[in-house]
Length: 367
Image 1: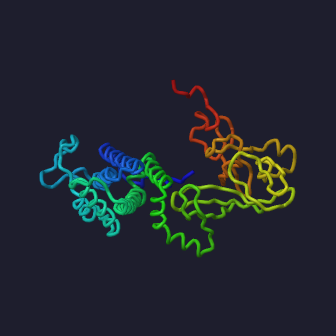
Image 2: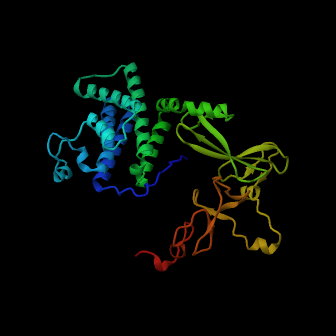
């Protein structure tokens, strides 16, 4: 499981033109190609693909401002030539100048330096014959490309989120591509660890336990408690600061022997490690109380969880509601306007289209 921290389009931001969307898609395709070539142990090809992606994606904010900004000033820009792809594009140095002087969003010296190292390696590969890289050269190239990869992602997902967060598909691709890279390569994960080490050190000094992530194998997993209002059970969320993998478990006491232990997310019943007592998850975690049989009959629980798509896994827990399987905690539930079933997320016009756990009114179904 991973978080993708998607950003919405900022209020007032203009819609992305088809040309800008095409530019983004093209850049992301080269980014994917660079990752695939790395996984296939083809560093020379990966360098070329990655630098192509960098040059394309750095032009996106400029093209979003105005299409003519990405055209070389050597000849007067013509819109039709731009749409036809029959124009000379600006260079990396010109991109930097325009980002600084026109958009007033300059690349930092650190970001420029990591990009420039990759650019020089790309020129070396393209313009000079190299039968192979030595192990030392390949290691250095991978390190520099990793630094540049993360710098590019931070630009797109943070500084330019009003553009790259405009469509959920872009945010998802960026998050998924980086997560796949980090979980598939211990080398890249180790480089990423260096980027977040300062934050991890600060968390450790504050008393947080830092563990080894099962997905990327880096010592970067931070476990923190989540306030639910339950007095007897503690919900703990473990999240890796390198690859963003996440897991949940609950600390509780066995009702039979009072032994304190952990219940991970899943659908298996709780079995005590000490006395082997077995209890259904719903029975164990449900904290709803009733003053009468009638009150119990009219309970809206169990509810549905749209995270794990189980229709009857959500129970009352502390001040809110807990999915007994994926251990997602919700502060409120909502009723479907069509089927009256409660869940954490109900769409608008549910009285017509239903919810994730019903089909809605058939009269409103498409042909």
